[in-house]
Amino acid sequence: MISGRKRLGRRVTRREFLRRSASVVGLAGLPTLIPASALGLADKPAPSDRIVLACIGMGIQGMGNMRTFRGNQDVQVVAVCDVHQTQRQRAKQAVDEFYDNKDCAAYNDFRELLGRKDIDAVQITTPDHWHPIIAVEAARRGKHMYCEKPIGWSFRAAQVVRKVVKETGVVFQFGTQQRSDRKFRFACELVRSGKIGQLKTILVGVPPSWTCPKQPTEPVPKELDYQMWLGPAPEAPYCYQRCRPWTEKEGYSVWYSILDYCMGMIGNWGVHHLDIAQWGNGTELSAPVEVQGKGVFPKDMLTNAATSWQVENRYANGVVLVHMDDHTAKKHPQQVAGHGHGVLFIGTEGWIHVDRQKLEAEPKSLLKLKLGPNDVHLQESNNHHGNFIDAVKGLTKPVAPIDVAVRVDALCWLQQIAILLERPLRYDPTAEAFVNDEEANRLLDRPMRAPWKLEA
Image (tube, helix red, strand yellow):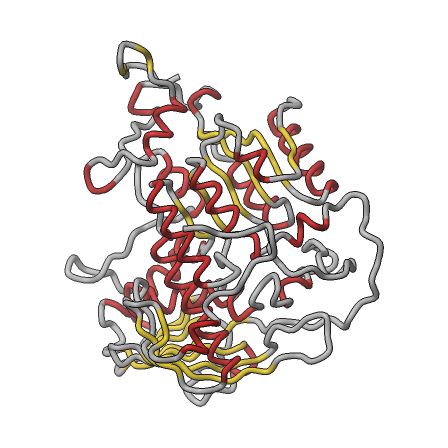
C-alpha cells in the first residue's frame, strides 16, 4: 500500500488514491497521483501498488493488448471477459501462466467485471458496436480505460462517451497507437513547422473493406452467448462468419465489413490515418467545413460496408483532405512516388509521406532535420500502452485523449455519411452538426436494440 498519506485519521490505500485521481486535478491539469518510485518503493512494485487492469474482449487484438499491458511491471491483470467461452478461457490461461497462479477471473458479462471495486482500469477490445456502451459504464464505475478505435455505433454515441468521461474524470486513451510512433509524430511536426511550405492537400489511403456472400443460418454454438454478442445491434440469424473472431489463419473478422457492427474500413482503419492527417493539419480538435464523396457498397451480400470510396474534405484553413481506399488513392492525380496507402502531406515547397513502414519526404533533407526551439513539438510518447499507464499514475497526459478521439470519430462518420448521400454537405465543427441538413444530421445517430441504450 502507498504509505505516508492520512485522511480523517486513517490510512489511504492505493485503491482509494487511484480512485481520487479520476476527479482530483493538480498542477498542469494532471491527476495528483504520486508514483511508487517517488515513495522509495522497490524497482518492481508490490502487487498492492500496481494498476489493477481487466480486459474486455479477448480476440486477437485483445490478446495482443493484454500481453503488452501484462508485461508492464506497474500493471496486474486480474480479469478477462469475452462472450466466446473458448476465447475467455484461453485468455484466463494465458494470464494465469504468466503470473504462475490461478487467480485471473473470467467473465461472460462485462457488467459483472466492472462491478469489482478492486479494478482500476480496463482495456476495451470488443467489436466496435459495443465500445460506447462499455466505455460509458466503465467511466461511471470510475474505471480508467484504454478503448480501441473507433468509438463506434454512431457519432452521437461518441459524444455521450465524451460527456461521461469528462464528468467522471477518468483517464481515456484511444487505441490510435500511431500517435506513439516517432515517424508519424515527426511527420506532423515537420508539416506544422512549415517545412514543406504552406500545406495544401492531404491524401489518405487505407485498406478497403472486404466482402462475404450470404451465409445459411446455423445453430448457435454452446460456447457463444450470441445475444450478448449482438447487444445493441439488430436481431440477426446466427452464422459462423457473422461473428467469427479475427484469427491468424482466417484473417480479419467478417463483422468489420457489416454496418450493424462496424462502419467498415472507412472508419475502422481510416481512423488511424485520418487522426494523423488532422494532427498534421493542426485540426485534431476541429473538423472540415465541407464534405462530399462517393463510394461503392456491395449488394445482396452478408457484408455491406463500402469497398471503395473517395471523399474530399475542405477545412476552414483551406486545406483539402482526400480520403480514399488504397486502390483509389494510388491512382489519384496528386499522388507521388507510387504511394497509395498512408498519409501524404503536400505543401508549396515539398511533400511528406508516412505509413507504418516508412517516412519519406521531398526534399529528402527533411528526414535528417533537427527541429529548433521555435518549431512545433508535439507530445512525445513512444509506448502507447505505457503512456496510458503513466497517465493513470498521474505522470503525464494521454497522447490520444477523449477530445481527440471524438473529433476523429466524427471525421470517420462524415466520410460515411458523405458517400451514403452522394451530395455536398456543409458541416459546423463547433456545433458538431451539418448545416441546415436534417437528413444528414439524422445519420449522426441511430437507435439501439432494447434493452440497450446510452444516456448522457
